[in-house]
Image (cartoon, rainbow, N blue to C red; front, side, top):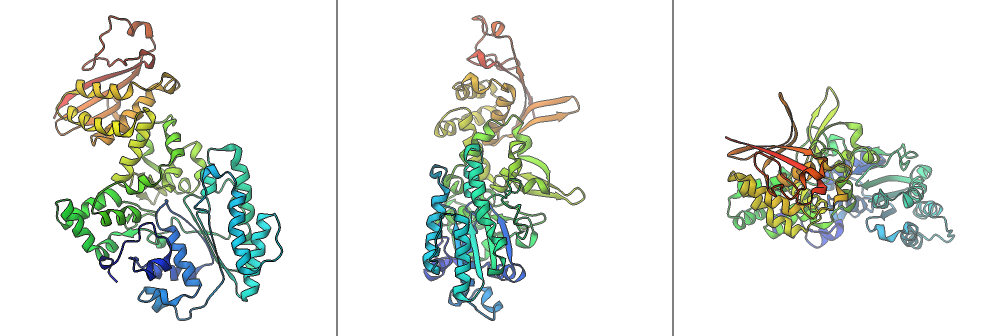
Length: 511
């Protein structure tokens, strides 16, 4: 049934609710049928708000034998025998760092299963209780159990930078998840989903029976919405957006593609749209940063803010396939963390080298992440930052770098000296790079030419600006009263507070 005559299931992750209450559902059941018939144990990593919970809910309804929910969907014709199995659906999506007590959360979840499957003997050991639930579910039904664990890694991600609690959380989860192997004789099918893959922390060390399908081409489209699915199911919504944005149908498609498309979870794959943002945009007939507004990754912002390497290299990087699957490498490089959380995606693939070129998927991600990071780094409010960005762009496009740098100085003046103490040059280079990308100017940091390296190269429709960042270690020389306050063009830009000691040289070339 066309999604044009149905309601958009924004924030609804329960398959039965979507079908029974007439919400739009993009049919993924052919892929689900292939999944459940071709294997037993699976793991899938996808960014938040990408449909993982709905995927597991659909699998749950299938294994419960609820054939009536699948009327008109692909799986109705594929499945000849509809059987019902006991399903244990465990979601950790509600875990928050402030909870601190993972055991209490698991205790509540397991109590519900114990009541359902008639577990009489209860202990304090969480892992043993999970084993008892699996055994009771299987023995009471006479069938093997289906286990679905959603956001398995939520507690681990919450404590990723918290060494005091990380080991305790890891050990508890490992003891619970190890039952997926130890209780194999009672299990018919099992699937874990999450944002990240933790391997070196040994969560998966004992689960060598899990098949990771996150980077496999045949499962690229199992979550999210493809361009063909968009065109086939949302013509009315696209037309409504076109009318609101004063453009035509193809113009509206271009806006949606620019802002919400561009995800690739394997090489040579179709583009995948962020389903949460896409549905919100069609429902509101408006382009807005829906995905980024739902939950700002505070740890990621904090980590990138103190990363002492050029950000321009991180956001356009070639990496091996292995580098994409282990989030625990984040202390050395944030690439896997950014990829798995949806801030980087696969742009190209070199088969000879087994190397992936990564980049930012779309405008929503770039603007959301860069503005949050810049506002945090320079310690200003986002609304204040947003007001000044267009003024800076206008000044550069008009060939007036003096005015542009005056505005930049006003934004940067609140940065405490201790923030830039360790790596002042790279700090300012990174934040200028973020700023220039946000205002839509072609900005390239650490740009190599035959004559040497340019710290930042800017290009507008009429001018090219060459920026050179230097650290002046002589406070006394440049903080004298006789030093001009604004030496901006063909010279040095002095900070209002000389303790920052940054110097910027500009050269302008007309195009």
